[in-house]
Length: 399
Ligand code: ATP
Ligand code: MG
Image 1 (cartoon, helix red, strand yellow):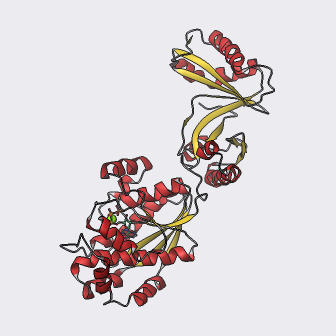
Image 2 (cartoon, protein in one colour):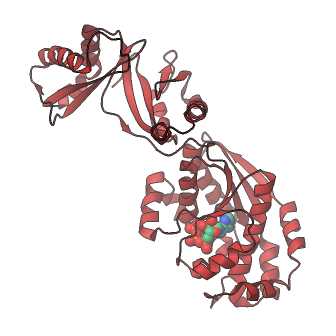
Image 3 (cartoon, helix red, strand yellow):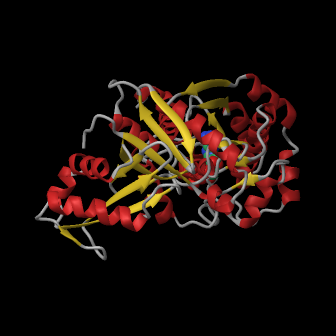
């Protein structure tokens, strides 16, 4: 459906319904939309009456790319492609006739549905629908009017400055605009779970910074590239992110040397919490996010989660806690991270796995086992070795 004046209408999500802080929701969504569409061309983007208007300036805009990008912006409930026209019945019908000709060719029945945001308009919604529907029925005699179950619904909106004609809208990403929900540090591994947990919190409006732990030479450059690629895939939804890369080898070797094997994983996870928290404090982030799901592995029993959380002062958000693996996999497919997640590269977690991990650990016992280590020095050393990468949606694939 190529059309000269084609534009996009983004319907706002749930804050409108809740009547929360609507103004800042709208401002944030407009600025996020501007940033995310920058690579698709020059657009005029503004908000009126709970709708964001995305209008191309000139003919250099990639409308297909813009449409796809808008469907990945959190806070947008629905996206419609539309064409503006004069606010007369003739202009509206003429526009619908030209713009929706392919849709009419494929339909055997239609109806017109109108909305009037301009309450001063001299016709009611029903009158507009009847008049426009009458003209369209004449133009497309093979397509019957069916107000109950039509193949095609033509939407007409009468707004302040123009009328808009569009076909049915498609669902947007939902949720809240990124940045409305504060900032959090997400622990990103190469697995299936943490990309999904990151996505879920971003959808609640949380701006993410990622932390990834590497254990060279036990983990490879390819394993790191895989994680950076997962982060890149997530930027289609979140906008650009920073990934902090923290060396973890020495900590793991020290744990293996000095601590009982059954606590390896738990002590390792406590270090992950401490290090992530240090990053969070520096970045003024208010929470940590993990991809843990209750009972999935030995370190994710309720008692084990308690032992891990023992060292965290910030809230630890675990959006997957009550989800089944099948559901997580379905989401990974939907958000586009599945194929990369299943690439078979090692993670530092799988390097030193105990043969018989303790599934009913006591905090005091783990603390005592950990006392064999100079925790502060190991944390400081790992942080001193930290590097970071900024990843943008327009970056080339890494894998
Ligand atoms: P995932 O599928 O996300 O890898 P998992 O089921 O394999 O999770 P674990 O390996 O026990 O579970 O890790 C639990 C959580 O700890 C992960 O979801 C992730 O948030 C974090 N995590 C694990 N390994 C790393 C790592 N190398 N760097 C950063 N975070 C990690
Ligand atoms: Mg993992």
